[in-house]
Image (cartoon, rainbow, N blue to C red; front, side, top):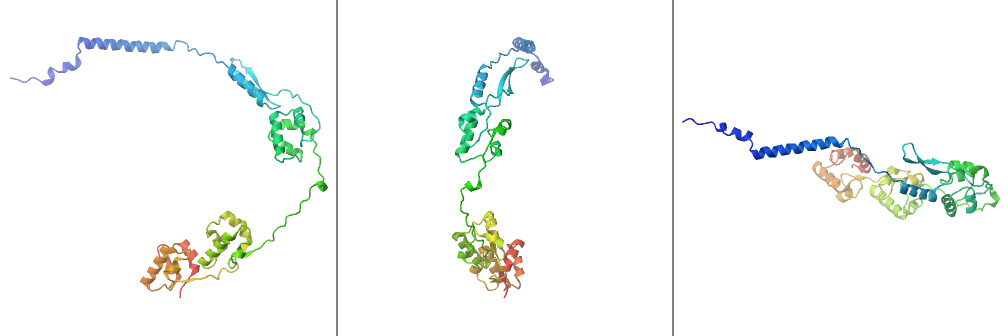
Length: 312
């Protein structure tokens, strides 16, 4: 008996629907077409927007102008051709009097007569309360609260009396301290305090650092002193000198102990150990240049350290 193919009786099961399933598909298609029709018809209906009420905004603007407006400028409510509200800047006529005046200690009423607002008068009086004074018309012009147009209007009427030199209070001239130049290579802590900007604390640090180094080779080495900034150095730089930069205390590489090497600011404990180990392996240093063979010694460190070393 021949076997029948498996899919011969089953492929129809995937492509046929029951009556209930066909009814469901029909209902779903009807709903889809209704949705498409509604979305297509929506664009033909006008989108009505509610009218915008500007009354509250206009009220706030009016209150602001009444409180903070200056003498020259104001805002005017204008309705354009589209029916929308706009606010434009206008320059109303200034209702004020002009008269010759001295701006120094001028009463508030007179400033008001000249057309100044309360806010402007407050700024001017605050300036005077802090010791400010108008010495010329230009000083009045510099007041940020006075617009240029307003200043041009009152400028011809400003009169500031000239102060005679005889009436000025004569103050005794301060005695300028005599400028001193200190040799940082030999000065002790007391002499270092004569440098302007150097107190006892810094003087002690400079002296101690110089002793550890074995002497200063150049003035810029002061910047290596703890706490001494570049800005402070620029202040007292003209007051210092270095007369003898060659009188340095040098370390003998072949006889110096570990502690002596370690205490030098340019060597430290790690490099001191390497120097001692190198000396044990090679018996002695032949030249100062041999320290370049040690890994920690780069070109920059060598240029700083070499003047403080010697071979015997």
